[in-house]
Length: 104
Image 1 (cartoon, one colour):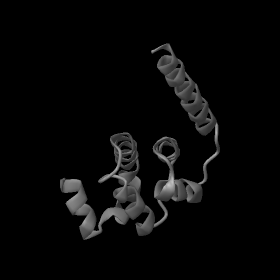
Image 2 (image 1 turned 90 degrees about the horizontal axis):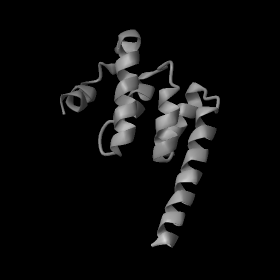
Image 3 (image 1 turned 60 degrees about the vertical axis):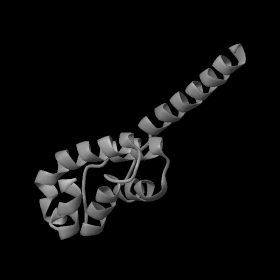
Image 4 (image 1 turned 30 degrees about the horizontal axis):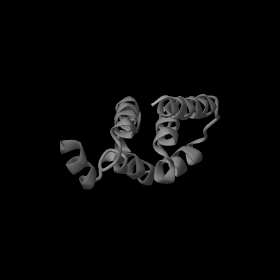
């Protein structure tokens, strides 16, 4: 039992170290969308929260792909960021496919 607790603490420390590293990382828009395509859950969360612009319909599509069929922690971070950015970049979200995703 004690071994299991120590193992969990090691995982926790490792995850916390990764979170601190990711929080201090400088992200550019291209890197953020690259991470959203193939990063881990923690990487995606951290990256998307640093997003401050959407450059194209393709960028909007990558965000929308991370709203369905993915871990809830990523969905919440992506939804939060879309809510923040959609007033300024709404023209990228007029794709008919996106309406179906928003309706879910």
